[in-house]
Image (cartoon, rainbow, N blue to C red; front, top):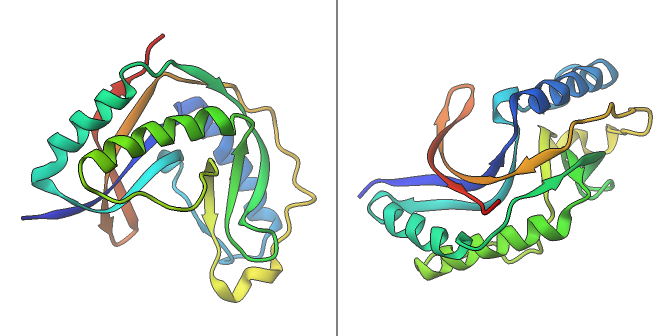
Length: 187
């Protein structure tokens, strides 16, 4: 039985991806070359739940359980408003954009988590912190990154009206994300 890596996420609109890509370009000019492994623009998203191993034969049950949990979830608007080093500025592993809408996104992640648990898979035990990963930092450079001089342009507000279930397929350039399901939220 094949096993896949997968995640539930909010896929960002192309215009937002383009704006973020320009932010990443500015950061690339300010940071030493090869310091960061940058996210490809088409892969910019907000992960709600990550699943390192899902049996292919259980995907339909998983999707069904998540759909049940999201049946009453309503669409909402989020705003990406600040750059951050994750998980902390002293021990950064990621350069990320944060959202003001932490509570709404955490609630959505919690509903998805209930559907995952109903399918007998574990969920992340750490508290949820929504973010868009711009780049990953190798351990040897953890102390050499600062974002203080970076100003963020206005990023268009994002209407969250669906959740996407992606398969993460490893490739020689990182991973490819293949959408397997879209669940619309209530208007």
